[in-house]
Image 1 (cartoon, each protein chain N blue to C red):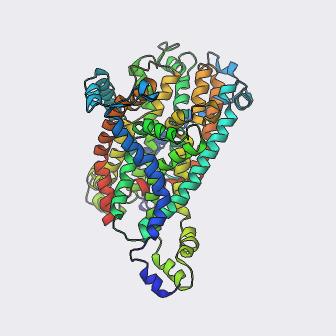
Image 2: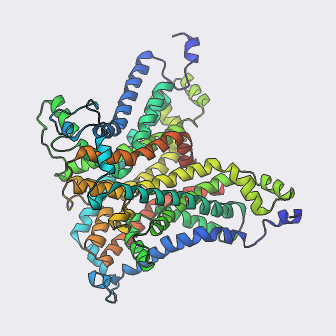
Image 3: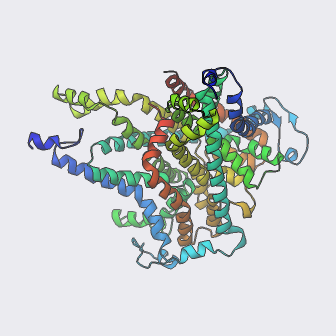
Length: 293
Length: 304
């Protein structure tokens, strides 16, 4: 290979065509191994359950049908209805995302734009709070909510999810606020803006990347969360989607796999679409917050 | 507002307090307060009778003694640690390998790998467990079919979840499959920080690919790798959703409990909140001990 053509390769890329070919093969293997379960879920959801029960699996939806989705959404048996679970999940998730953004924005301002004595302690407390496993807290949180009559309520679950996502959200947003020069706020204040006016009109618009990253994080946490929802929302009418899925598997005794896969697809699609849309910021944001440096 | 106000902004005032109150109230009510309750309960006799209103009795360290002298606790702990070690090792090795691979691919193949990784990463854990449970289904699972076709050995009707060893094999597949993308992306991001001039210079001096990786790339990545390692240990030690969902799909619960599932079963299943509280406190201490390094290193960056 001539000097000229190797120059065109990205730094670090192997020069031998054979090695590059082998690496491409490995790349395809990694892709198939990563994507196959997702493909298999969608494939099974698009086939009639009869076809799924056949000896030889259908590797493509050659008997394409949307019946499974219709069946899951209009599921008649009372305790395992999909739509109420979807509603609960949507309300809880969106409330968590919105409230987390507002509360974390305020807290992040306090922690990055002001100096006060107990600041360091608060920051340590935030980091420690992130490390407390939910499994350990589940019973005491159940009892606290019970005491406030908040079991089986959307407000109760939303508050729990807020407490789960806030430490990470505040920590990450704080980094983003610190990255915005304070001089911009000062300039706005010189021009007659109040301090809060400066926060909202100058800092907030510049904070979109941070708010997106933390918002996606909160969305995924709340949408996927299983343990708290299982324990706090025990009444069938306030189940969230992950708990619904498990109840559905149990109720059908893991026989109607086509319908179960249709339900799984409906739960997974919003998260997957979200991930694919914001992937660049997501990875950057997660990396900046969780693994800075 | 005048310019003096701008100068005053760094003085002690109550604004930060007001800004912190909303988030602070939520965290105090639903993290700090339950944590205190948890510690208190772990020193109480608190079973079904107390749940229904009998006054709980202070029993000192009895719950801890009971838990620590219970064989099942040690079995569960041992199982959790073994599961954690295997998963962390696999996740880190494969994650690093894929992260390095991504730096060596052309644009198209890199995108292909990224999309695959994102799909695996984005799957909700419960959904992922159910889907893998279906793939490993005894009668009509695609895995049994493919294994029969490829190996010639008859896997038709092979039950994966009924045996604890193969149950954890499936659980390991699910957990590592979902954890690898985060490691791979983070390592890839870390690798792009390594200055290409240094690598080029080493190459001119005759260093082989492996030597360049070991002596230049690894030292650059060390900080990132240690933090990833700590996070993976913490996440895999407390694995809950995947195990619990897989137990629903099939499998013998008693022999496949990990510590998170065990706490849930002792507290909610058997209603022994005192013992559940003691195990929970032990788990919190273990987690904070494990994450001490992570927290310290974040605070160090903070100061610099």
